[in-house]
Image 1: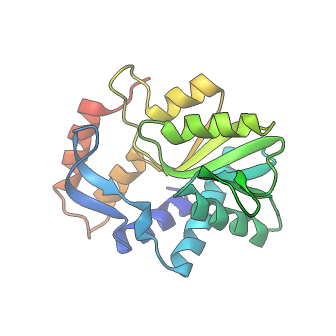
Image 2 (image 1 turned 90 degrees about the horizontal axis):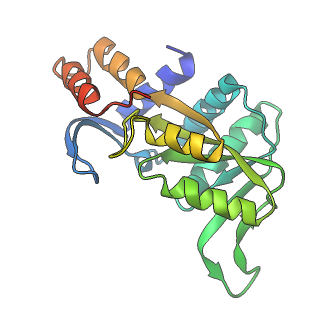
Image 3 (image 1 turned 90 degrees about the vertical axis):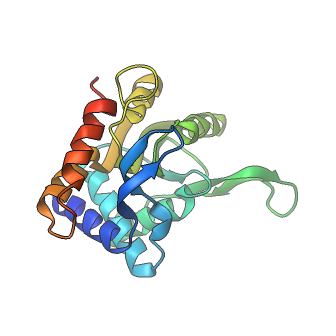
Length: 216
């Protein structure tokens, strides 16, 4: 397992951003694990998280001109990633959006840098794909193009139609490069290897993947 994946999973477990048990998802499925990026709530955690995103992006070899954080969770995530790149000598412009247009002050729905060229968006997870679709439309309206979408966790879980994961379906639909820090496979390997994780967790993850995992 790549060091950035291990670092992310260790931090997620310690921060209780990654939990094992029994969790009912919005889809109605009962999952043996749950990820909540909001649990990362300290400066050091955000610094480590930004570095994990950065290393996953670098490993993908994707080319891009700017970073975008879709409101609302994507805003602090994209900020952390931009700082992590700057620490390594690559200073990318970073942009965000508002859910509702502001009628006073600077106005509008775009915050931060102008959106130009090839844009990489940062978010926590992809479920229904709403944030991806909204990001594509918003970025196109600004005259730029969303070319990659990076999430912390790819659940590798198929939707209610088709056999691909939600992230892969959206990547195909919008010609995006899909990137994640970790996947369900990584979480399974971590659960198998880490003595802090109850031994019953791995078989339950395997059963969940067999029933709901993407195959395309």
